[in-house]
Each structure stands twice: as C-alpha cells, then as structure tokens.
Length: 419
Image (cartoon, rainbow, N blue to C red; front, side):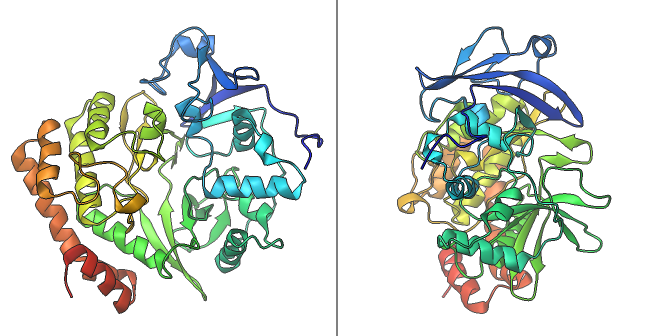
C-alpha cells in the first residue's frame, strides 16, 4: 500500500469548532507534533473571552498550548478522542481507505478527526474536513444495509463500505449502526449525512446485528430499554422497527435537539481513562457526577444505573458507556443511558467495579457504594427495590418486545434464577 495518494497528505493542524444549539464558533487549534508523536491544543482567544467548560477536568480553558498525554489515546486529548469513531466506525474508515490502496495504519489522530469533519457525534467539528463525497441517495433499505453490514464483518470484498461509512455518523461501539432521520408519524426513514433533515424528521440511530450477537438482538435491546425505564433509568425514546426480513432497534439521538447539536463527553474523555482497561470504578463515576453537575439528583440517577447494570447483568459498562451533556449555559447533566443489553463483560466481570467487586457484586457491595457517595440508606434501598421489581418483570418486557419464549426464558434464568 502507499501513503502518497492525492488527497491523503497527513494533516498537521485542525481548527476545532463548536456547533452548539445552532451557533458555530471557533474553540481552538490542534497541531500534530511529528517528533513527539502527540497533539498540542490551544484555545482560541475569542473562546477565552466566553469560556465554556468543555472538558473541565483535563482540558480547562486557559491560555497556552496544552500537550496531550501519550496514553491512553495515542497522543490525543480525551475530549477529542471522544469524537473519533471506534469499533464499527473505525472499521468502515479503514476498509474504505484499503479500497483506495491507502495504508490506514499511517493515519495520525488528526487525520482521523479530519475524516470526522463536521459530521460527528456531539457538537465538536473539525476543519479542514477530509471527505469522500456523500451519496445523494436519501432512502433507506434496512434489510439491504443489514446484509451489507454482515458482509463487511465477514470481509466480503463486494460489501458496500462506501454507503455504510457515509451514514455511520461517527458513531462508536462494536455494533454496526447508521444514523437516520425518522418521521415518527409516517415511519419513513431518510439517511442522515450531516445535512439538515427534512421537515418532520428527527435524528435517530439504528443498530444492526454484530456477528457475535444473539439472533434476536434488536428485540432484546428494545426489551432492555423497556425494563430500564421501568427501573427508573433515564433512557432515550426507543422503538423497534420491523421490516419484511428483520426487527431493528432504534434510539433517538440525544446529541441532537430541535435547537441544534449539544456537546457530549464520556467519562472516558473527561477523565482521560482507557475504556478498554479497568481505569475507574463506580465510586469514581459518582464522584465525577457530583463534581461536574453539582446536583444530587444526578448522583442518584447514576446510582440507579449502576444498580440496573448489576441486576440486569449489563457488564459492558465501561467508561465510554457513561456520558454527560453540556447545555448552552455550560451546566452539565448525565446523558440518557445507552447500550443497555445483557453482557458478560471482559472475563465475566463488570468493566466498572462495584464496591471493589466486578464478578459477583452483592447487595452489600451496592450499599457500600451508596454510603461512600453519601446517598441516604433509605433512598438507596428504595432504588434497589425499584430496580429489582423491574428486573423481576423481565418476562413482561420481553413479551412486549416480541422476544421469543425460548430466548426470554434463557435471560430470565440468568436474571431471576427462574427455571
């Protein structure tokens, strides 16, 4: 492979912009240091005059160039690493570059951010953007796209990587997914390629089956969203979209509002914590929530999510699966919960330990976290019972989602020990 193709010169500098609630302004400049193999960032003077706490723990607003740590994000600051697709989005970009005979291993973090450009998740935008040119096709055939997603995972050369990469929207995670506009009244879908959606359409994300997923993953994740809502977890609007050949889980995007985009940071980005390793635990997450939001209701909401993840056996609860949303006035709150499914986690453990325990957390571990987070014991017990009651009704949620009796029973045995 070659790195000398036209249009693939390595990016040395990028302008970072914030597209916040319909207003776009410069945030600062990113520069790649070839010798040090890391990024430097400097806030723009105009931004210094009206600072917003975009990343208050690791990239506070102040004068001067700020070097990124070498680890854990390959010489990139945590705030900007949140913008780079991993998992599915990274696979699609790498496969597309391979088709063009370009060695994707030579990409720097700034090259990847330039490919995100103005179409990524959240509100951060990067200029100059590198684009392949977007398809003008706005229609969506979910069954065909699901087939193409499977073909990509199976490394079939004829897979339409271009089309999938055009509409993956900078999303992260292992599961194949696309971003769309959905008309809730008519059910019609259009591709969301970063342009203004037609009137009556809202921004949603639709997931397809990964090769390692159970056959009914769409219905399973939808049932989990119903169970989480019953447990008191703040979840986005969700739905199950049925076609002739499949059922696909869809979730309303919380980084898009009628007013425009909003700024999102994961716990991983805020703390520059590696989500692939046990860098933080739930005690840390609750402390971060209190410091960032200064609202005890948000601390309790994060505690609810921890209890749900324990009782519902969602062990894929790493630091990129917990995030926060910044309003236009600079105040923070947790985003709605996402990626809630049955998961055994790495080596059968939670990514975030619960009171020091990752494999078999007990009520004692849960209550220990509550005590250290200064959550009143009565409140913690009430939360525990509410979540337990919702999980106990798993068969009802599974039936509502249309999950097969066999699969619903398999999960019920895991969650509720019912035969």
